[in-house]
Structures are given as C-alpha cells and as structure tokens.
Length: 246
Image (cartoon, rainbow, N blue to C red):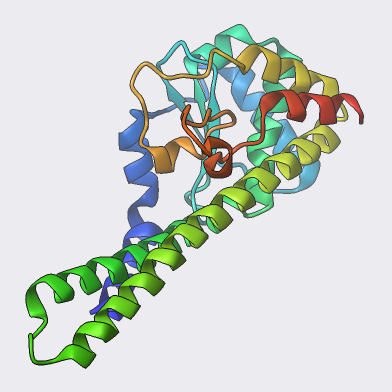
C-alpha cells in the first residue's frame, strides 16, 4: 500500500504539478505580444547562460512576488505578479527574473518536489499506523500493537525531521539563487533594491497553499513559537546584507 501510494504521489507530481500550481495561484500565460519588456528580459538572460527559455505566467495581483516551477524543460515556468511587473524598474525586474531562472538552473524546484514527496511518505506511514492501531489491533495481539506504536513513533519523528530538513534546504537555496542572480546580471544591488520593494508587499490577495507559497521569492513565516525553524526563506534583511557585500 505504501509503495503504491508513493508511486501515485510521484506520478501526480511529475505529470500535473504545473497545472496544480497554476490553478492554486490563478496564474495565466503571459503572451509575448502582451508584454515584450518581460519576454525580452527572460530571453536575454536565458541566452546569456545558454538555457532554454521557460514559459512565462502572470498572476493578476497587485502584490510584489514571483516564483519558478516545473520539473523539466517542457514544464519550467517563471511566474510574476502584475504588481511586480508594474512597480519594479527594469534593473530590479531583471534581477528578480534572474533569481527565478537560477532556481531552475540549480534544480531547486525539482529538489523541493522531492522533499515534499518524502514528507508525504512519512505522513502516509503515520496515517496507516494510526488507522491500524485504532481499528485493526487485536486485544490478544500485544506484540502487533507494540509494533504499530513503534512504527507510529518512527513515522512521526521522520515526518518532523524531514520538514525541518526541507526548510533548511530551502533557506540555503534562496541564498544560492540570490548569488546566482547577482552573477547573471552583474548587478547585485539591483536584486537588493528589488527585495526592499518586495518586503512587506508580497502577500497575494488570494493566499496560495503553503506548499506553493514556499516557491515564492518572499514567503513570510507564521508568527508563532519556533517559527524560524519552519521558515522556508532566510530573513529578507540578511539577504539584502549579503547582496550588498558582493
């Protein structure tokens, strides 16, 4: 059952992850004739590093945010909000696009999907163990009940460790994408300026699911105890400080 569930999970993630993300954020394809400014930036940056040009989507929202998604050259997509397109100048917008292209080049999107799958695996094991303990345990089978409890403990511990590892990986990849964007544009201060504008203006009117929101260039953690442990992004002030030291 676990193997079958994992297989289905991978198939869903591989074949329809782009559609799920697009529907969750209400993103739509941005036509070349609609905005040559954005298309020229994406195309020129891709040509400068020798990578295929991804699709370009837009979210009709005044917030300032962007993200990259996809698992292959055919599905890689850079998504920008209307707010970030309209409110950033050319250098700042180019730096943001370079940041998202860096996530694609560095295979960060693919890595995040794999980490999500591992979280799903442990979640599935925990659910199976819980159901077996509640409904399938025989009173006369103490060893079986003990085994289910052990499986439950392992699954729960593995679930939380995999989440913490996933968030730690995400934070490091953000720094790497910032550095790659600075190298790609030869203008680290442009990305620092863009991040200042984005800070405090990144919340979409329709909140995206947490798994999707982790892809955004800025995703604020929940204000709760130990929130920093579960933050997918490093503090934006630290990111700006690092960029200003380039």
